[in-house]
Length: 463
Image (spheres, rainbow, N blue to C red):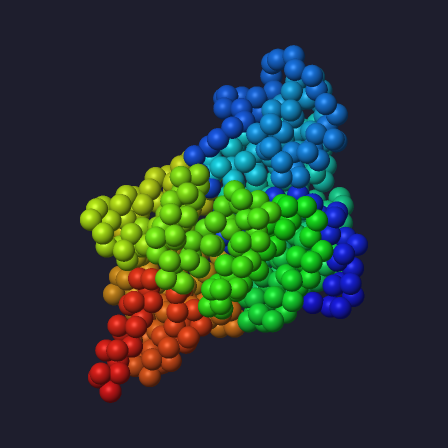
């Protein structure tokens, strides 16, 4: 990252407090990348629950600051609803309510909030045609639903109204990354860095660099961001990003340190808990990892932690663990159905889970559908693995190579590529890829690493 930008960070970090709520799936995921059974807030059937009642209505501006700063989100939503009952033509309040619903869906894993968010944004736009807050909110909503062309469209429209909109600048980077348009994403990150340097932009800048294999710069940017982070929400967010970066490079001890810092700032921050569980497992603390992930999935049964917990049960192999694992994999399908009902495209999650723990043909259908929509390294890897699981490894190989072509250092991608190379008779390539996966992050997956080591032993024995 440019030196001038890093110097500016200390002066601009405070402006970004709470803007971490616009994060797409992939980074903290990843995102996903980013849910669970709904908790708190209005559960009525109205678009915003703001049609009746006589509660006191605080000023919308002060209210929005409280809602979006990472406090009690449910209470903030109730306050916004109360305000809108008294001031139903408040354009900004409707936009802020929509954003609060998007965040509630993300944190609670309740995709039914997305249609409510959409109606709130529609109300804001009906009252104030083309207002930047609602357009930027629609961009965040589209990204949360994995509609990345839509996210890009709304972000661009918002930036036409306000070129300095932090939320729209961030959503634009997210959309370009998830569409696999990495050169444009890098340009968008530079533009955002010039206009609104701060935590949301810096973390995205770091991720774009990581995707290109520049781990050193990504780490430096995140460390500077953490040094300048203000408030527990930003500390938890950036420390978790650093933990995930360390985890990806196989530095599990450093990852645990970063996740501990994140949880010291916010003991209930789910991405940090999930990251800690994965690092615990890689460090040999299987019981601790299972206990931590069980906490996560109770609150947020997303495909990623569900599959990870199922694999940990399989790796432990105690009485009843096979059944427990199957239960976690079954919940992935249930969550995907709930997500689709809320307008979320869940094909990538479905493809990854089904390829290893479900119906390979369903995995391939989902992976092809996602590939038709976007050509990111993650969709390339998912399609490659689904093809391989269906016995079509020659067809899979170009996609596996594409997944690793940007320089992004992923042990999972290398493992998949190595197994595909082995299946196609490219034994030398397979040995190199599998060795690279285990050297990069030997604990990337207990089951995957076990498979990689067994394949390497077979390859060596056959030499």
